[in-house]
Image (spheres, rainbow, N blue to C red):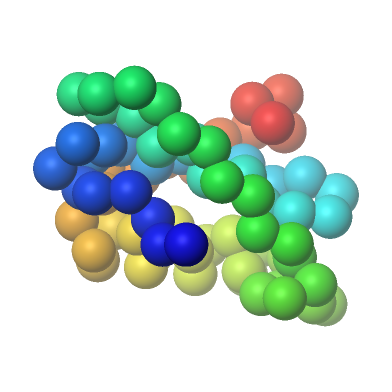
Length: 72
């Protein structure tokens, strides 16, 4: 499963938990949330994995924001 369409969900917020990254997509339509296990994308350096994901989403065209742990 890929990420939702930028046209329908132009905003993406990434929050880092203890074991996963949560991506919350929102904007013009309903909202969607996805989780990615850190062990698959950032074992050893979770903050770097979070920042890489934010960069990748921004390059695709999402308006990105780094969420806080309370956003999870």
